[in-house]
Length: 458
Image (cartoon, rainbow, N blue to C red):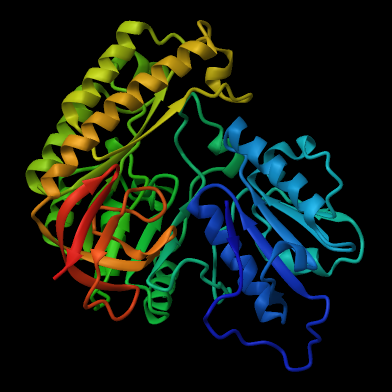
């Protein structure tokens, strides 16, 4: 859960607007795409003269941007709504928006004051100003900025997310994203470029491109395979500057030789991919309606590592999909031991109403899912402990982001192979020479600690 409070950036407010009773608090749940939508809503309200609250209890308006992707996400959203209703001060308004409103509004039985659809982001001002309970939930399932829409970045100044598409054109058997978010909609290249320049001008040194699948960008306007993404990347890279460009959510069937070559040749593209594999057994992949097979997945990994030796690969895997046998699971476990991926998120299959997999036979018992999850995570922990040793003795460019949350003796940072929020960090135990956060420093890696590296500034 991310709570957004007052930013250090200056915010223009109307000199004639009374700030009394106009404090706002945001809680953004789910993926970075949700976060971007929350930042747009925050920007709209700040431009109208509303003031960020330092705490939820002080807020006059509480906006909760929900996630409805999985049952666990919906449970978290419902709990967050109930907590906000209990903690709010008397008379404060609770506004609920996001994916869960669009797809599972009937589950939200708590007495919230206003519902706003996930595609109706720009209606946030109406929602806040409304003097009555109500809703604005149109058929628009997702939101993309267009024109001069205000946005207030909630991440640290040195990095920001840039959403380049919404919706999904794939039909994975376990997933309801196409139902929740609708069909693929690519943001026009000119708009992406405009937002990219704005983020850089605001001080971002790392821009993280996000979509349900980056490789699908442009396929709704005539591009094939990753031709659209490659075109967009080349346009972005024409913008001069010493920045990092990070690619997230890039499916394995979209990683082509041309894209790998571009990543190899362009040092501003981080040697990093978040490539959801889900499984490697061919029968499982077919049942999941995935567009890849085992040999292709392994071939893509091998090619990336050959062309980009320092590449960091993150993936997600599903255990307990309907019909998964012990032998198929062991094939996945062996793959994880052999391929030694840098970061792995393991998920137990969630039986989602509306998905193709919901009605499949041979549903797996919950205790079997848990056992397979535990075994896979144990393998990955062992892999990480061994693989991270390859960095010891290396000198890396590390952006130092601040003090460790538990002690000011340590600082924390990230190298190019680490994405914020989801990957490990670099723990800095000798920070002499650090004069500001959000800057890059040369750091010698001296040790590892769990999923983190340890280093000193040189």
